[in-house]
Length: 447
Image (cartoon, rainbow, N blue to C red; front, side, top):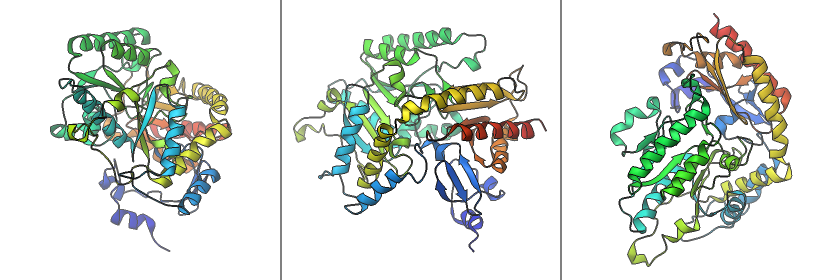
């Protein structure tokens, strides 16, 4: 029998991982999956509590998606969109336009959340250039934002631990404060929201001739630690963008496809972005695929004689991959056929209730942040004083490693434990995650 743990350590370089620590650990190696469960090479079963990094929607081995991929393999696995079209990419684009916020009419495919954002930034930049507004080339993002790992998306990121090392490679951007009440305990959420909006409006009033676009993760900043924005913040940003002729880019890579309880988070405040970035759950967690949607107004700014060089010169070898598009279309069909969003609402309510019951008075839980099926449990050494654990303890990593003995897989963001299960999970499995996390926090943080 092959020693998969040893072979992994010999050959694989894992993302966002200090490999020196990895070499010293006995790590899980996943061999198969079914429903909301992952199985390792020993046969042990674990609830996939983070949806295999926020991508799995309907569970593993979903028969409808399996069949769609198999059927598509019988036709064509890949055909380029450079100079050709293919039927799955067309059919999926039609569905994406149908379910997306009004006004989004064109779909540009890529392969990941980072590239979806990269495409959005380049489209926004060239849009103003094509319109003769060459000075509008600055981008605005939020403090603690995360939009991916390519150079353009990192330039709009605000998480130092991920991004500071690359600072010399990045282009300059403008930053507005993120409305995060937990870090401002004496400030009401509405007051903090209004202050942040006032900051952006003053910036927009002074520099609208230079600002091309604002990019924002709607409702929830995921990688920052599940920072949930106050109600009305996103709508306020949209209002300012419209007033000062600034494009609004909504990065729904993490929040899209039901994660917040709505198909897209921007729908929660009836916001209509100029550009929408999608990935992660788009294929139900099966294959890499991303989409950047734009309005016809933006698209038409690129229509001109070839010699005007207004073409959008950007693409990927696997743009609009037929296998991935077939999986994505099947994923979207399941939302309709199984009334996924409707059935999700009581699960969200159950999750809210049990989070409150278990963690509201827990001594080492400083904050519970939730928006739909996106949850962050922030660990703290002293709840009353909001005193964090020393970084070197890596308490979040300790808690999530310890919880594996209870058959649950979670992943931390620093000392924030993220819970983001597949939408297909049942209440009994939700309770298993929460009760297991309660045990793991007590065992790890109180020792």
